[in-house]
Amino acid sequence: MYLVQAFKQVGRKFVADPVQAVKTAEKAMATAERLAPMRAGVIAFSQEVDVETDAYDEPRILLKLGNLPPGLLE
Image (cartoon, rainbow, N blue to C red; front, side, top):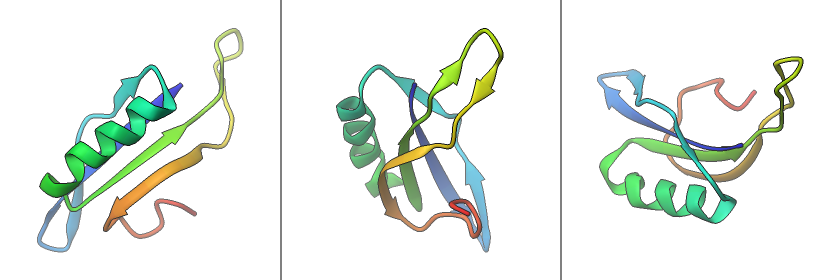
C-alpha cells in the first residue's frame, strides 16, 4: 500500500488532509511533490498490510517535504 499524507498549518497546529492511497511508489512521490507547494508538509510512505489479520507493518518513508507535526516520525 502506498500513501500520501499532507498537512496544513493553522497557527501552531498541523491539520491533516485526508490520506491519499496510490498504486505505486513513483505515484506517491509525484503526488507528494505536487502537493508540497500548497501545504506546510507532505509525507509519502508505503506500508505492508495483512488483510486477513488486519495487521500493519511499520511504515517505510519514501519522501518527506516541508514541515511535519512533531512526533509524527517517532
